[in-house]
Image (tube, rainbow, N blue to C red):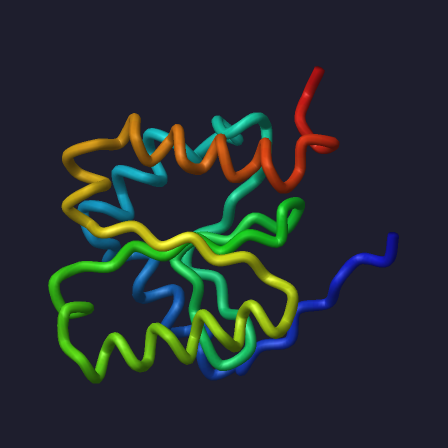
Length: 130
């Protein structure tokens, strides 16, 4: 299988680095409890990864999976429209997108873990360790 090359706007790299160093509490919790050190079945996740004209909160290359955390600003109608456009574009490029509310991450990390595991089992059972 040919490896996918990820094009991105290089001007986003500095912005992504800034966000990586100034993550939200929910992003830090997801990173520390689920993704750092390949805790999710050994899959490697990257934080604040530029993809196209967007920055993914978390990205797993092996699964072609983008995970987004949405805070209170995402209740705004204009921000929601941008979220829909981002998700549609990512999906049109072959990425899968899972979105979680910050409050859910902070108050139900086990539920988030279960939903991600369920998604992996449904979509990439062949990539799971025996």
